[in-house]
Length: 402
Image 1 (cartoon, rainbow, N blue to C red):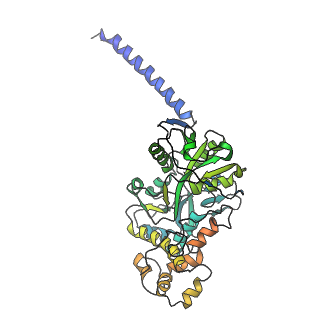
Image 2: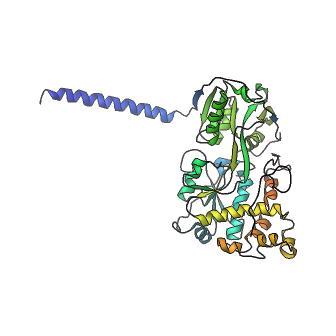
Image 3: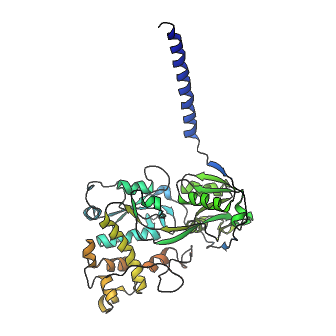
């Protein structure tokens, strides 16, 4: 037995050295914040022609995401239905983006939230609480961490997530439920105007920045593999870091939802020096997300969204909703506004929840035009985000309120 002791000591020594080396490598990896670069190879071939898409060249408010307030979430009603919890709390906890002007933005100077998604938080608060102002906006991110958007939904940190999030099969089947699409988007690329890049084929062998953990990264790989386009992927964690990497010329192009690219471009100091390519490599249906299991809450969020769309279909907006409430003989309008029927009661809501939504926040067109329309610095064309019955190729439609 004694002769094995030296061998045992040598073994322990080698094991200790190996652990120390691995520890140093782990520390080195943890401290390395440089982007992950992956070369994705394929055999290039001809692709589709690109169409230049211009957006408003004016500037938007500077980023103030880091100044968004810290929120302490009340979890005293965990286990109750979401509706009961929200009504007992007296405020809706809504997960949003704090740094995407036009969609979700926190102005640290005025201490105000604004944006298309922010207004849909107000829509739900108006329906459930009768007061569109009763919202606690909770900044959530697409990056891994305690405030990752989908974990915030599953954990109950937020009652609903409305943060430019794409509806996909894998997400829908992972503890989440997606309410009606509020914004039909598609993925494209932001490039420098003097880069000579005008088509997808021009991106061959170029460095393309994409956000970690996003559908944009997956779509990029899938689409370029199908087109046999070789490129160098620069994977970036977090939206702020993604666009900083692009502006610092760590990549030749950045890819994301076209609406996000247009909005981010408008915030650049020299926005005219950049352009969004016209073609789309994916369809991105964006809308509210709730936790799986509470079907009543899912119905409430869904029909609150539908109320904005149905109101536009019926040409009811903020300016005329009171007249419709008092004078309309249209049974569709009367049911939407709660004059007749028991639709609200079926969801556990007041009869006039539709009226509260339109009078306090607006119909879909009101919300879109306030945040993204022609009168804003973004001037994003509605495209498919129009009511189905009002012309222009719109696809927005609500089931009947009956």
